[in-house]
Image 1 (spheres, rainbow, N blue to C red):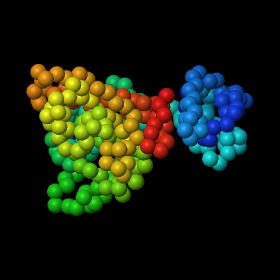
Image 2: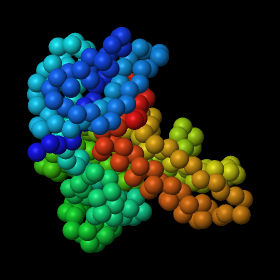
Image 3: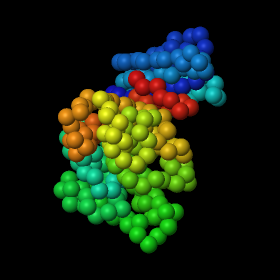
Image 4: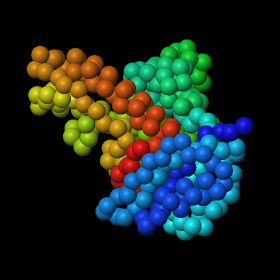
Length: 278
């Protein structure tokens, strides 16, 4: 039986890369059904995402590509299947509820393994979708102890992605470092504007005409990780603060879902503090 695989390659650019890579796939009996590539003009780096059909996506393909591309190349053949995700949340329901509904109807190529929260507010919502819920209270423990308890739960599920669906606590560097470029956050503003607390109040007080949201990878630098998806919606002077917040919730959940779909389809390459997205 033939299966669909995704080949991801990033390496220093040179003449003939596409020819060499597709030639290897052809020699190994793979049928290419889509291909995207990009060369960053600043650092002369090459990125390629190729979808191909093959009986088993065998290791010979990877080994042969390593031979012709050299040790600096990052090569990955992704087998069929959904990405495994753990969701972290606090009290706000809109992003979590949207992801649980999309997960139920297989919209994201993602399997939600569990939800972890430092409050019990979202327990009934989560369990209504037959998803395990873990309440890890932060009361009476240090931030490091709290994060270690959360990490132990995450490790037990062995996810591909950790999703911060309005998780309202800043994570320590040691926690972030345990999941490099695997934690995805939704930020309630069009970064880099209005960073920090109460962004909608900041926006409201400034009389902005658009509000937005940013989905990004979490790094050691607060709210400055590589951006995956951003979007904005118009607002007007006729809207009060509550109406603006409700409008912002809509764009937040859509932006987060779009970002996760791209990631779960292996369309996102991270380089430096930027992304290439096919």
